[in-house]
Each structure stands twice: as C-alpha cells, then as structure tokens.
Amino acid sequence: MEFSVKSGSPEKQRSACIVVGVFEPRRLSAVGEQLDRISDGYISNLLRRGDLEGKPGQMLLLHHVPNVLSERVLLVGCGKERELDERQYKQIIAKTINTLNETGSMEAVCFLTELHVKGRDTYWKVRQAIETTQSTLYTFDALKSKKDETRRPLRKMVFNVPTRRELTVGEKAIAHGLGVAAGSKMCRDVANMPPNICNPAYLASQARQLAEQYDKLRVEVIGEEQMAELGMNCYLAVGRGSENESMMTVCHYQGGAEDQRPIVLVGKGLTFDSGGISLKPGEGMDEMKYDMGGAAGVLGTLKSVCELDLKANIVFILAGCENMPDGKSYRPGDILTTMSGQTVEVLNTDAEGRLVLCDALTYVERFDPELVIDTATLTGACVIALGKHASGLLSNQNSLAHDLQHAGEQSGDRCWRLPLWEDYQEQLKSPFADMTNLGGRPAGTITAAAFLSRFTKKYSWAHLDIAGTAWESGANKGSTGRPVPLLTQFLLSRTGELDVE
Image 1 (tube, rainbow, N blue to C red):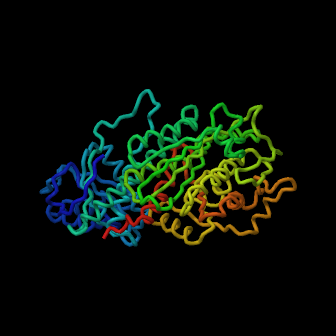
Image 2 (cartoon, helix red, strand yellow):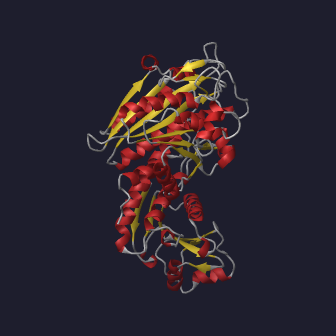
Image 3 (spheres, rainbow, N blue to C red):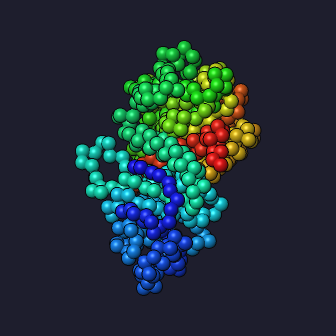
C-alpha cells in the first residue's frame, strides 16, 4: 500500500476516486461544497432526494459526476459535525477503506483528513488514517490453502491537507504511521500463529530475522542451561512440563550514544498456557495461544523502533515459555527460589506469568536501565475491571505512569492507572515463604502487579496488563496489535521525534 499527502483543490484531482464527507442532515463538507459547485448542484440534488442522510458510516458511490475529473466520488457520512471525535473519525476511515477496497477503486484521494476532529491536528488525522487503513486491510491467511483475494485491491491513498505548509507535517505523520503499522502487523502475525508453530524458539527466530535486517540490532538467546546458572528457578519451573525449551530472547537496539542508559521493555511470552497442573477449563482454551501477547507486543514495538530508526538505546526482552501439565510440571504447594533470592509459595500454577516475569525483571537490573516497562496478558481480573477498551497500568513512579497514559491518549491505545498501595501486599503473605504467587480474587490485577513490584525496587518501572486488549474473541477472533501503538508513541515522545513543527 502506497501513501502520500498533497494539498490541492478537489476539482483538479484526476483519480479513480475522490472521498469527501457529508454531515447530518444532508450537509456537505467544505470540500463537498466545492465539488457540488463545479458539478452544477448534481451532488446536492442527490442529497435532497434522500440518497444519503450523512449518518456515521453511510456510503454513497457516484460515477461520472459532471465536470469532475475523477471517475468516482465517494460520499461518506460523518454524523453531526460538532460531534466528530477521534473514535468516530477512525470508524469512518475504516468503513471508507473497506468500501474502496470492495468497489475496485485501486487508488483514491481522501479529503477526510481535512475534517475538524475535536482536539486533533493534521499530524494526528493523517497518522491515524494510515494506521487505521493498514489495520483495516490486515488479514492473516498464511496457513490457508485457499486465500481470499480482492480482484482490484486498493493500492494507493493520497491524503489531502488544507495548506501547503502542512505537507511536511503530513509526511512525518505518514512515516510515523507506517512505522507503527509495521510493528502492529508483526505483533498480530506472531500472536495469531498457532502454538504448534509459535513456541519460544519461534519467538527467538523472529527476533534474529529482524537483526539480519537492521544494523542497530543485536540478539542473544538465553536457554534453560544458562537460566539455571543465573538462578532463574521460577522461570524454569513454569516451563518444566513442556517439551519446548524455555528461551528468553534479549534484543539490544543501539540507536543512542554509547553511554546512554537503556529503556527496557519486557514481554510475557507464554506461547501456550494450559494452566499447568491447575488446568484451565477446556472452553476457549485455544485462545491461550495469545498468552504471549506481551512478547508479541514487545517484538512488534522492536519492529516499529527499527523502522523509525529511533535515537535511543532500548533492550527488548521476549520471555518465551510454555505452561503444560506433565509429570515434571511444578505443583501447587511448591516453594521456588527466585533469581533475586526471594522465595515464592505456589498456590496456583495458572498464576505463572508473574513467575516468569519476576526473574526477567531481576535479570534486567544488569543493564542499569533508565526505566523498565513490562507488558503481559496477566490477569482475567483486568478484563473484568476494564473490559477490552483500556489496558491496566500500574507503576512505582508517577511521572512514568503519566507519560504512558498520555501516550495512550495520543495513540488511541489507551491505558488506565490502578493503585499500587502497600496495603495490597498483605494479600501475598505466606506462612512458609516470602510470598505466595496468588493474592486471591479481590483486586487480582493489583495484587499481581504488587507481586512484580517486589522485584523492581532498583529502577523506575511500569506494568501494563493487556489481558483485555491484546486480542478479540468471537467471529473476528485475532490479535489486535496492541500495545504496539502505545509503546511506540511513548518512545517517539521520549526521543523527541514528535517535534513536528
């Protein structure tokens, strides 16, 4: 898919299709009015007849409009002008892209980026249009013997900006949008892979392939033998019942100065989570291939960072593992010694993500990080608390939490902060060890983060629980590509790449 920006009047556009907005009730946008004038009222006459009301997502495709150079004009319902917000804008873009793709318009000039969206500028509108377009056109058919192919797919989109002065801003928005979209696609591709293909070794191979493409990237893989030497007993215990070796993939991206402290991103990579001895219910267990959504998100963010060539030093950790029931599996009642030396009483083997992450979070101390963010499909409690709209955010530093929430608002990949008060540590008390791996039903998302916080006292840290946001269930089952937009936005802001003026 090819994208570009231009600044021009609609009557001069010679394209397969021009896309313009119509507001309720049957009121043309400014660009639509220009087209109507040169067509001698052809479009407004159609609206008066009731062909299009202007409700959000309504579409009317016109052919050979009088005096218009383009073959088609697509009228897009945008709802009430004063109510056009970012959510509705993205829905309108998605519906537009689907319509163009289905009707054989292989290229189009889109004027929707000139619409007024509350609180959003040209950069945001163009970038979100790119990301939404790529997300809308995404399919995962790598394992289908017969692929559904569009006969005349959409290949080129030109987004119009109001003035020539905004072309530079628009071009930067395209570069950033494409970078985020490339990472989101990689995240979705890897997460959607079945667990008989996507195991910890597969995660490592994906990272190595990226290292072959990008000079600033170096990858090392830590297997079970080295984990044992490091004392990562919790991580090892979780994978003990699986035939697939646990592998922690460490990716070093060197885009900043030699002495610059790195940002560290850690992703939970349970490539399949059966629950272990504490076996999960059978219904919907196929979706437990998405328990590596955190690692997929970190890998996707790595792809975005490489594409955008960010000026920062970043370490990406893919904590690959598989939790299976077996005679060698760890059990409820076991007491494990973590890499940090703290001991954990296992109450439930399905609370395994925190056991993998606690050792990974201790391991990253060696990098003297500027900050650490872990991302994980950690708790069903987070789905109950926040649904599928926002990821859970917990942090030991207010400024880091603020920056992540702001990045979520900017990117549309939102998160919501939950408290991490000392009071919640009470729920992790054990009569036999330093802590248990389960805090009970109340505040399950918070107690999981409280557990992790015991291993993050030497640096600034934030935890993203993406259990509700990493994938969709039902007829449209599949990875969402989140939290790649959030993490990439955070890194763009951190490196000053968003200074677009």
